[in-house]
Image 1 (tube, rainbow, N blue to C red):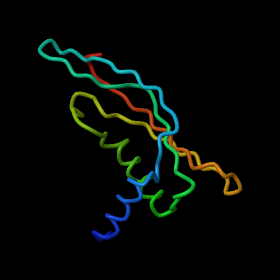
Image 2: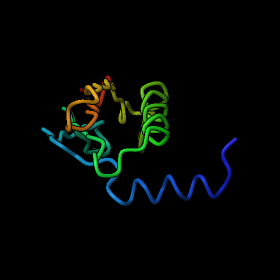
Image 3: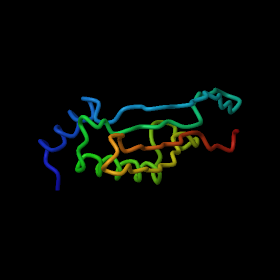
Length: 113
């Protein structure tokens, strides 16, 4: 079981650019149910482990959290279909100086679309 110190260290790693956005294509869309509307996004974002801060223990935690996100969805308005993600990890050979690539496809799946 993880203790508070380990959680704080993980948060510091994330805040110190342990994972960075390495590309994205995001389109906002409006879902209108007749009474009010919500705005979300669809498409993809790539994240990469920063080679200067790469930590295998923390990368395993990110991997586990993203896998969980595929099951439970992320963010707000999940009951309206927001927050669905699809996650794919692409490891690089150790000989390459490029970082581990994480591809997250996010969006909205709603009967209102």
